[in-house]
Amino acid sequence: MDVLIDNGVVNGGWLFDRVRNGFFNGMASESERIWPPVDVVEDNDGYRFIIELPGLKTDSLEVKVEDETLVINAERNERAWAKDARVHRAECHYGPIHRAFRLPADVAHDAIKAAYKDGVLEVTIAKRPEAKAVRVEVAYTN
Image 1 (tube, rainbow, N blue to C red):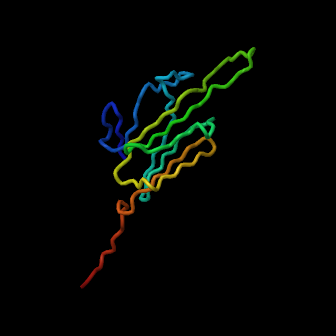
Image 2: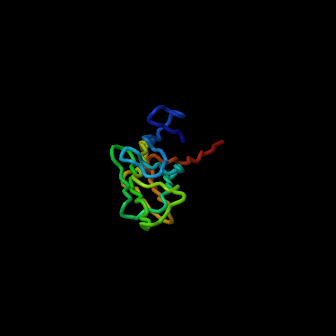
Image 3: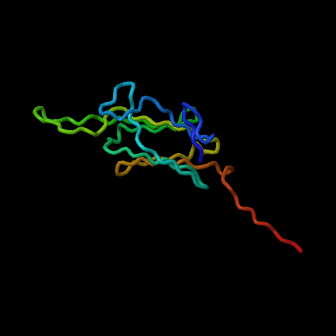
């Protein structure tokens, strides 16, 4: 599978992941977003996007397809500490989360499923039936 990134082409392929100010430096500002790791897997039946999103409330998670692009948005809210608490180390990232992937032409837009479990979002998009590989039996004659 090939990957396209908006600042240039890598491997000359279809997958598009917009890169914008995604620095992991604590609380994200309005222009910065958290970019969680994603695995994208293709098989004969379709595509799976596996995104690590621990600590989200399900009502903050949005998955949609617009303009041939899979868009994932969420918000991870900062923890509320006691007023007199002293935080010695803060490595968790809070703020808006955004990932976007241009979809290939062979996806079935009416066969998209998303499930969030144990901090992992899995989006499954089936291929159109006519786009799936079909094995053809060869008849041998003498």
